[in-house]
Amino acid sequence: MRNIQEEIKQGGMIHTPLEKSPVFPPMVVSMIAVGEETGELDLMLTKVADFYDTEAEAGIDGLTSLLEPFMMVFIGGMIGAIIVGMYLPMFKIFEALKH
Image (tube, rainbow, N blue to C red; front, side, top):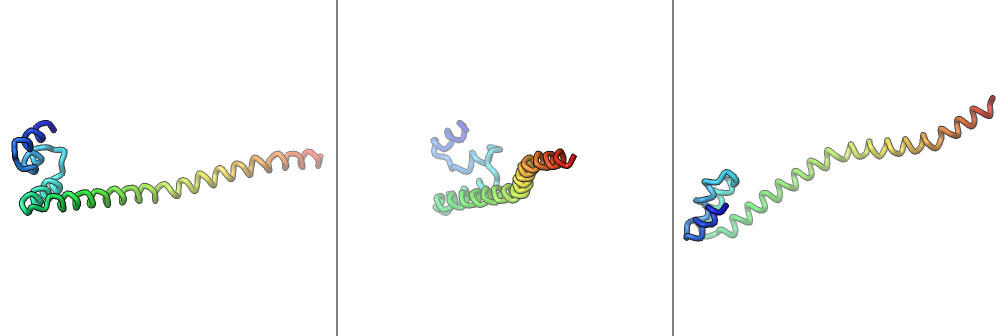
């Protein structure tokens, strides 16, 4: 990251040192390059941010849709355990009264 900062401080293009770094995906580097060439860097960075925001939301939605059924089963099991815990002593008392 320091190399990237140094190259940019020396007046180089932003996308050039980013291409050398494995941290930045090629799509991001390409969009930054287009933004620099067209003078619309702010617009391109906004589009990159929107893309990753949408991707993060999709990941969260997917995770939520996977967790919901497990949570329902867990809550149902807890309610079932509470009901069994309440009625089991009553059944034992009725059984004892029969004898």
